[in-house]
Structures are given as C-alpha cells and as structure tokens.
Image (cartoon, rainbow, N blue to C red; front, side):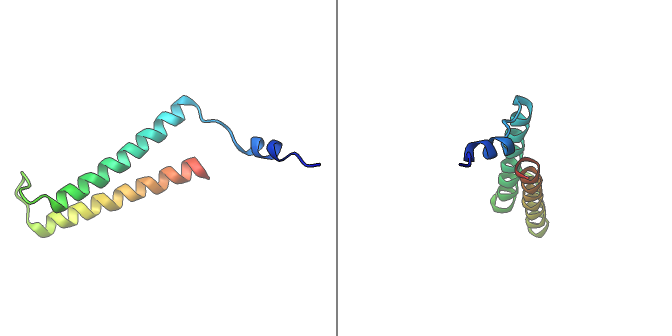
Amino acid sequence: MTDFNSNNNSNYRQKSPLKRFLSILGLFMFAFYFVLGLLIIFWDNFPIEINPTYKTVFGVVLILYSFMRFVRLWQNNFN
C-alpha cells in the first residue's frame, strides 16, 4: 500500500520566517507599484504638472514593472 503523505512531505518544506517575510514584502511591493501606476493614470488633479501622455506612459510602465516583480516572486516561491 502506498503512503501518499510521505511523498507530499518530501516535496513540501515550510518557509523560514525570513523567506515568509520577504514573500509578504514582495506582495506588498507588487500591490504598491500597481496602485501607484493606477493612481498616476487616473488622478485628474495630479500634484506634479506632467503632459497627460507622459503621465499615462509612466503609469503603464509602473504597472508592467509591478507584474514583472510578481512573476519573479511567483518563480522564486512556487517553482
């Protein structure tokens, strides 16, 4: 009879507190850059006077950067 739990336990290790903290920090930074990009794009009375085209481009770049950070975080934690 095969013990299914022994196979799962060998592939699964609990994260150290430092790795868990860095994972949470990575998720926070993903959310921060994503929300910052959305704010820059959709905030009508933005405090810094920027051409609307450049404002949109900068917001899209921040959103793309946040997704790059999320992909790197996913690869480090789940592969």
